[in-house]
Image 1 (cartoon, helix red, strand yellow):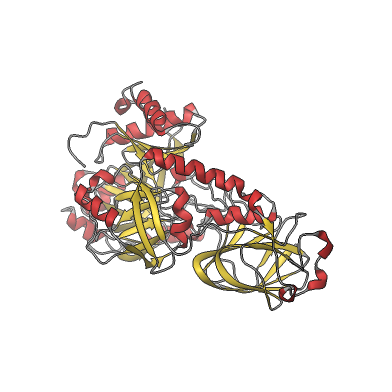
Image 2: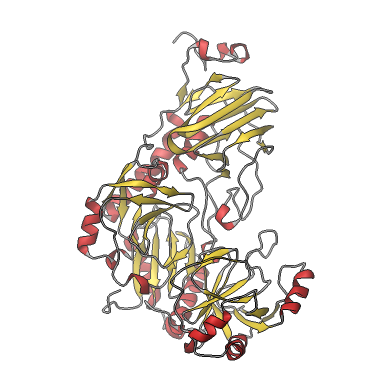
Length: 332
Length: 249
């Protein structure tokens, strides 16, 4: 089964949860910028969150199904339609052979995800299907490509209320090994400051702006290059913070003031340009509790999926649906 | 970093990492310790460790926080530190010596003369010294397969450039602070571009995706521009004419 790509935004890549274990070879993990969206899509299609999906940065594309297939749409909300009829985001849908799926620009947030039932079948390299453009692994999906997928037998016509994470907000951070390079006054100012996401952002990292001065460490230019982990908040030479994302470098000489918790990385990555950001230091015990909660939320996602209730007038091809299956209700 | 820190130092990295730091400045012993400690962590195969790496002077361990608490992990590492004198541990076994044909200077590596001047040497003398230096892979990082190599002689302890060279090509040999980096891809850099090779550090299309390992040693043998062109024309295996032999343990 496959989907033909007629048009596509400039920064759409195939992503799964990334490749672990190559840090010692200078290769960072890559993987979806919004891991939660990957799990939401898997829950909607009743499949494994290890399968790959199409990550669409800012802009989607136009696709045609070669056979009947199942899709789900998650992450940053984008305008979407099937054969001209609008379809719900955060939901799963049937796409019949010959039908055109059009996904427009992000309405809120940055990274939208198109999931195919059975997962996208891209080449596995070092244990993952994730493109890593910085490392020149894989490439952006282009017009004329075909996205093939595996077999899928689950239901569609389901929806999932997404965790709100598309307008910025508070990011919880823990102190890391270089935090003490910053004096207490700088750390206090950092924690109290109102930031906004800057315009410079890609899958390596995102700039965070504010109106005050920079946040420099003492002896910043003499620091030995040291290991980097995604979520690190790195200060450039001028003391401007960048939050590092899945394609970050594996080592670097710029000091890191703190690290955003994994549970808040979807919110960080989805904060639109200009969106407000604040950093809140939490203790390692609080962080562990938050992380445990995040993992159990992910595990509970399949149980939160519910039938998509829609006005029959909005359904583009009513006759193709199994109305007596109970999944779609025309009366509710 | 404050002067009163006691090494080795064990600290957390972000939410799910721990770092054992052997020194806060580059030293032969600290790098040796970091490699040996990482090798031991690898060998022990602790269930809760998801990956590890060695940087210039530290060993990094990522762990599953659901299986072990931060405190337990730090204590476990502290215990391992106490097992031996890591600063005087032999380097890991199975290391290799690579000899990589390298064009120094010319239009292929235009900052050789500048680097020689900064080191207080004539270009010929700089090439002679660099071409005979046997350097070790201190760490691999920043970009896939990309080695930091050293130490070079103290005369090559020259600073990074104040402004970036917009782009140097894959296989470029660059120099600063008594270290080489051999670039695995085209990149902007503040290090001086002193040599050019046809060696590929990252070979995604091959089984030996990452040919170099931390602890391997390299000699960048001077060749002429014509020789490198000949190597490139016949370079079907991406080794850039490099030879490789085992280093006896």
